[in-house]
Image (cartoon, rainbow, N blue to C red; front, side, top):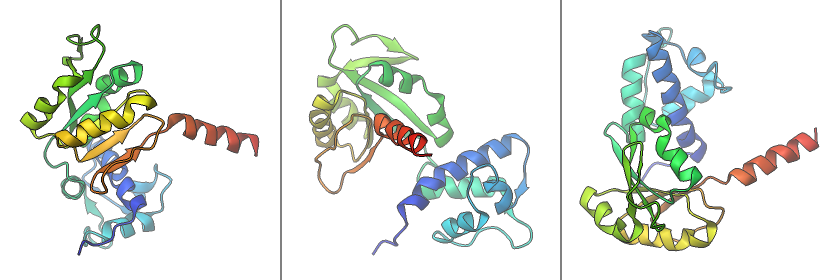
Length: 207
């Protein structure tokens, strides 16, 4: 039986890792939980509790070895090896994500992009060639890719997601403003920017 890990804890792990990588660049070798969380608006106690789900790390009164903790977090998250990702829908958002350099921090790389627009197919964006979505299956199976990003209109998202799953994709980051109906063993995270912005406006209005 798998150990229960709170969803919020899982979401914080990449944030801790990114912060540690930045601190490593600044020359930090040993660091306290207080310093790790200082710029994250997270309590040191929360950081220690999050780590406790996976074991005991660091030394009381001394702190954490930055290099060692980075490797531990990479292994916990599952990015100690490069994660290949595909993207479907090369519009403005899709193009921006292909150019986004932040994925490399978490050892992730968009290796293929797909679209159904003949005018886009064959073009290059940051050395990524846009392929015909009808060829997606062979690329996914050839590289054994498990992660996909959807940046197509809502009306096309379900069909694209089903094609992804049929080809072997197991985890999807969906930017389309719609809920996907997929098998329970497929992991889906949603990024609804309009909803998030609307939430901010509501909070601003009700200050």
